[in-house]
Amino acid sequence: MISAMPNTGLAIELQPAERAQLEQWESAHGTPQQVALRCRIILRAVAGQQNVAIAAGLGVSRPTVQLWRKWVHEQGIGEVWEIAPGRGRKAHYDQGQRDRIIQATLQSKPKGMTHWSCRLMAKAQGVSKNTVNRLWQLHNIKPHLSRTFKRSRDAKFLEKLTDVVGLYMNPPDKALVLCLDEKSQIQALDRTQPGLPLKKGRCGTMTHDYKRNGTTTLFAALNVLDGKVIGECHGRHRHQEWRKF
Image (cartoon, rainbow, N blue to C red; front, side, top):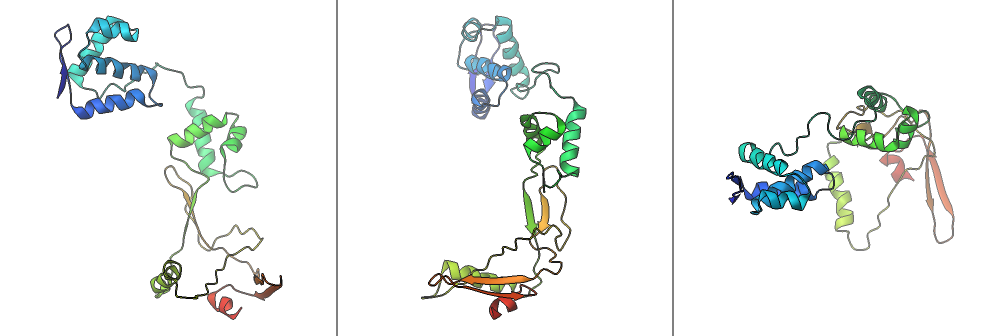
């Protein structure tokens, strides 16, 4: 227990964890200045300084120091962060403007784009990109992120997955591993299953594969020794076609 007796006869007692919390608030970049000042007053009081010395050192009045001594003595440090309504910098945009930005982010997409960026939304709403960024952070909205999902129905999926990972983690001597990636050059917007929309605190989701709508699959390989390209076209891109190629 850490305590100090001010010249008013009012004692302040803090647990080590409470003192550590005040020190963290005081030094954090995001702490409002008035909150940081309160933390400094309380910490100096606990360190044994008198009201007059604290007031002179921090450039505040002695009644202000006495106020926060009494407050912490009676209420603890829980309300130190509270800022009275009407205090601080006034919001430049009203609640209606902020609601429109959030609604547009969640329920619409920019023309020709897959998702909103801070700059696009700022231009569309007539605000700064920093305003959009702060709103998205406040509501935990991340339009640029999406999660893929698809459950395999293959009964041997786990066994096959283990084999593939094992080739990389512990390959046999002189093993040849052929890796396939896709580059269709055709933008596919329709996925094989509907995904979940973007919401506050949750990314939008989509399947990793999409409807091919009759497009063919080109399997191609480059012989790095002579520069020859080996290619075949198939109607599907399953493992059967891959092995045949």
